[in-house]
Image (tube, rainbow, N blue to C red; front, top):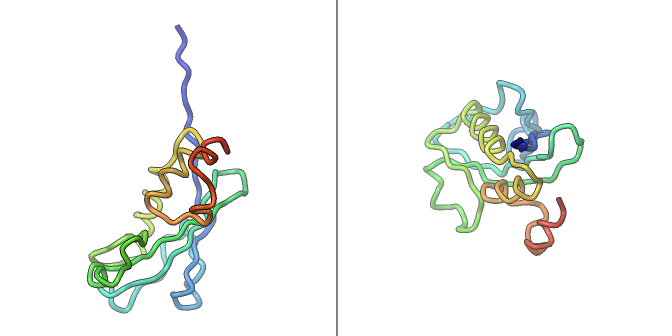
Length: 137
């Protein structure tokens, strides 16, 4: 009896962007160990866009979320996809984002997308019915 092995698609982040950060930090390369550090790590809020795709394809979709600290939690609109830190650090942000994206690796793009959409707002959100998305694999 042979067992087929299933392989998950490897996701990658081409880059991140945030127009809310100082100019030199607006494009974020998550392969870099250093990045934006806030003047007050307990008082941070910025929009983050991530270009995420299947490794090696050169194709990405945009996923967005709000990065904020617990201090600003009450100002976040209810349906906003957000990642909340007690205290912000680039290292913490990098670990969290890379971990979330890796945790969404799955056998099909639809399964990856389904998971990513739990954490991030997808650029095509609401444009397709779920049954149509499943067929796009």
